Each structure stands twice: as C-alpha cells, then as structure tokens.
Length: 306
Image 1 (cartoon, rainbow, N blue to C red):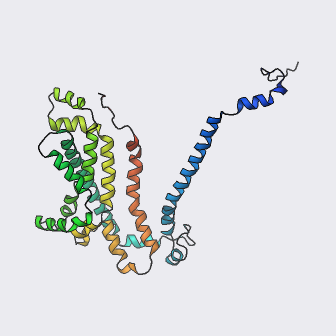
Image 2 (image 1 turned 180 degrees about the horizontal axis):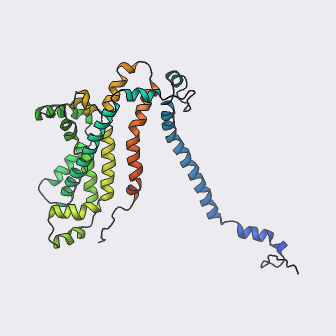
Image 3 (image 1 turned 135 degrees about the horizontal axis):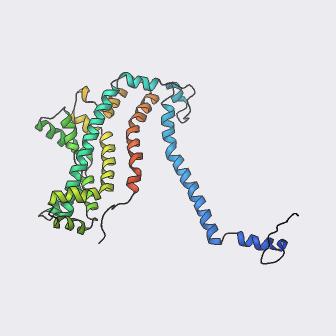
C-alpha cells in the first residue's frame, strides 16, 4: 500500500497555506536590512581590497616585462612577452651582499629597539623619579622632528665616535626610537599594578619584575614594535647614506638606489625598478603575515584583573 505524505498547516488545507507560509518564511524587516547592509559592506570591502592590491599586481607583472612593453603599457599587469631579464640583471650585481647587510642591520636594530624601547617605556610608566614628566614630554616632542633634520647631527656624532663606515655606525643610532618608547609606555600603564605587587612580595627586584612578569604580558606591544622596527630599518635610506661610504656596506636601499642611477639607470627601466621593489617587499610582507593574528589577539594574556 502506498503512502502519500502531505504537509499540513495550522490553516488546514495545504493549498491555503501559500501566502501565510510565505509570510512566515520571509525574514523580519530588521533582519533583511542587516543582510542588505552586510552584502553592501562586503562589496565595498572587496572594491577597496582590489584598489589596494592592483598596484602590487602591476608591480609584479611589470617586473616580468621587457622595457618597451613596460613603457608602452605601464598599467597592464599582463606581460606580452614574459621574461626574467630584470631579475637576472639584479642578481648579476651585488644583490646577495646587499640583502645580507640589510638582514644584519634590520635584525640587530629590531632586537635593540624591542629591548631598549621596552626598558625606557617601563621606567617612564612605573618608576617614580625627578624629571620623569619632562622626559616623557621630550620624547613626544622628538616625534615631531623630521628625520632629515637629524642627519647632520648623526653624521657628526658618528664621526666623533669613530664608527663611521662600520656596522656600528649604521646600527647604534637606530637602536632606540621615540615612537617605540611612547608605545611601550602607554601599554605598560594599562597593566594592573597588582601583577607587579605580587612579584615584589615574592622578593623580585625591579629588573626581575620587568623581565619575568611584565614583559611577557606585553607581548602584543612587543610584536607591534618588532614589525614597525623591522619595516623602518629595512626601508631606511637617508641614515645609511650618511653613515657609510664603502660599497661592501651597501644595503638593499642604497644598493638599488645606486644601481638605478648608475650604468643601468638609463631609460625608464620599469621592470628593473619594480623587480627590486618586489624582492625588497617580500621579507616585510612575510613578517607581517606571520604576526598579524598576534597583533589582533588579546592584549593582556595572562594578566589579572583589578
């Protein structure tokens, strides 16, 4: 015996349930507005993402073009004749030496800034000593001074210290920055004091409290300082121009700048310039993508609440 199934509704006959079912299935007006708003938001975000990504796509595509192709169609990211000539020209130079120097300088400067900026930030946030407010205001005022104004004083100090044209002359002046100290000071002020009081009751000194208790809590701020410091030291150009003159100490920025103004600088050289830009972008992009979740993550992991 065959069985037939039919959907019944509170209204009896299924055929009479059409308009009522439609009304029941339709989302409320507020829900419909939220859905429309979400769709519009995603469309706008997608458009903005494409606007930001398109220059990078042009950069990568142009680096694989020939010079005439890049000159005739600079906005077309697709090469008419694919070639790696620009990358071959780069690696025929001292690109490996420039890359190594950039890595050495950027890593040491980043480690130094993370350590010294956090030390100074903790002292200004927690220690009470005469002139603390004046020092804090001086650091904030330093952030308003253009970097180009400091080039000549830096050069004179480096010469006086006898570290001109050395790694030390390139690294030491960059080991601390006002913005990093300010960021760390602001972050340390948000950490509950009770966290440090518990450590002091256990007999920990100031540095032990800073190193073992407070610094691990400040991991999100430290990661932010790490990314900003690596990016700024990796892209630094004016300081490296005045702190050295030996070709053996060229970084990527000074090496590529000299390359494009030298024998290979004739003409537009769009593929060569953008190939260098692509290679210089990769380490910073990798660092950002590795740590981006930690930046967005919790800001006080493991801290106690007051």
